[in-house]
Image (cartoon, rainbow over all chains, first blue to last red; front, side, top):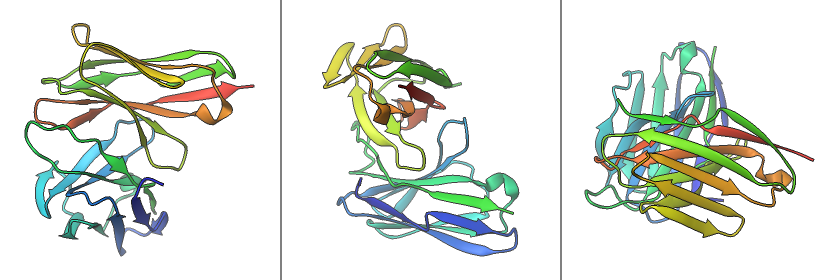
Length: 116
Length: 109
């Protein structure tokens, strides 16, 4: 148990569906992250939020839309996805994203997404 | 470009020792992390190295050579529960983590 929870753990959706992934951290952290993990590939950073403000968007297609209502919760809204978007989506948190400071990231168990 | 290389898969025997290597080329260096990820579970933090040398933590040790752009994770007295993927990640000059693709470690009895 890392203190970061994600729901749902598994999701199957069609290309025309709209769904949302939820992440919650109970660590009192101020930074939250979305990553995509595909088989045999490095983790791909998608979005970073620091004190509820988005600080990174690594050229992610607009069919992925993040939302961070507070420092403990992070959502990833999905719509009109493609089969190649099938992957494990991991959420992580860290104390803060700050220049000159290294923080360890703590991960949730991920949502296994399958797009049909 | 930035690059992290680690072997795709390794096999070792229960009770033995295994060394998982990681080489990196990044824009700046603010430390190297190792994470363990069991199938279907969250990656969990194992170690962080920012200075050259060996850091020991129980059965696991991590080594760093900044001049060679090289690190390894050493696992001793292997147990079946050590079967997992081991992820190497480097924090670059922008304090962003650059990840390797992970090494799947298979432990045989």
